[in-house]
Image (cartoon, rainbow, N blue to C red):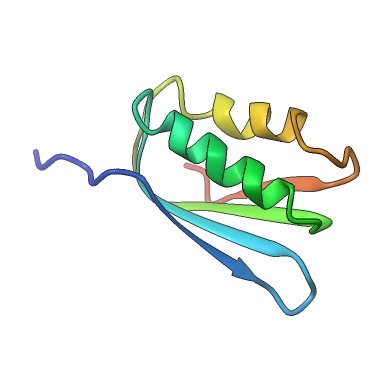
Length: 88
């Protein structure tokens, strides 16, 4: 089986002012710090909603799901929402 590529992310500002973060590749113990930095940056951008699209994730181990939860807990504005989509 071919190995999943490393974590990559694309951040897009939507017309309504929300941010969409599309992630792809691996979401594991090695990529968790990178994903944490990406999500904390997005949550600090002032958007009221940050949507994280996981449809491009090819591999996720037990470390992966905790990253968005931790990033949301550390968000500067407690009113900022974090929405996870296409999580399988």
